Length: 438
Image (cartoon, rainbow, N blue to C red):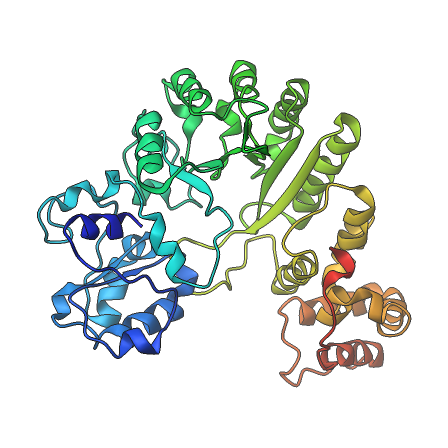
């Protein structure tokens, strides 16, 4: 959106495409910009570059940027022959045009969102930054490499005024800061947000207005006073990460503060497959259920699978995890649309009544997890009955097989019970509704 704004200032025509487009490919373009996101979209990204590379007049004017391009520039150049643009567009000559260092500070061009059929959920929101970068160096995060320098304060009022002038007033405010709490100007930032019309209870045309710190806030920097200031905003939801069970006391205390100041809608990022165990993961989800019941909050958990920032696929397996457990969680989240309900009833239905039931659930065939209601009286019951009858030795052998999530490699056991169990994993997939656990 900012690149589009930059070119339109020059009088250029801009076309925005999401994915592959035959009509656009058939034309010859002066410049093509291809953005990248996560490294595990490697194949899709390389295919996109190759799809459009003959639609450019001069190969030097095909630009590849974004997170993956910054993190894996050498690999992309080796694969495609194109040298990506790394980092933010705040330095001269990255785009080889006069004033290209100003791109990152421009007002985004909202009009290009109307050129595609896909509708972004936050299209009626101001996209803005009050800070850039982060003071942390978390090993699972790409921000230190993409935005290596922390900018303490970026005037917010000016950004909103300029968006209003060009595209009209927006209902909500989406702040893309990676660590706003690290700013020494935090009080000033809060005041600017309120002055922009996003104080608690704010409305626009009789509709509630919301401010969303979309990347989440750093609970380690969240004091009670800062929570009080956040509560002065029309914040919904308050996003906090709960990355490790060792942060339990700090996390619980922050949620208690939120409740005390009237912030009851929270969104909780739950990192798993990093240094945690399956037991840790379940317990963090369970803590949210307990907090909801005790405080009256609504904490929606969003499990986020850790994948190294330069992995070309999603197949990474953490030290304490196995492929079957990871696949099982994926099946649960497919049924719940990626969200963990704040209510105990639905949590137990999706993840099991306790950690042992949870781990047993993860072992089940995909269909038995996703379409649980359809299989509960036949396949699931039969599977569970045989599994529960396994001896310790048989259970260990069964685990050794299913933990690798490979069922078509001809492995057969000397135990008939195990062979019968393995047959359950070859049931054809069914095409039924996924709403039963939502």
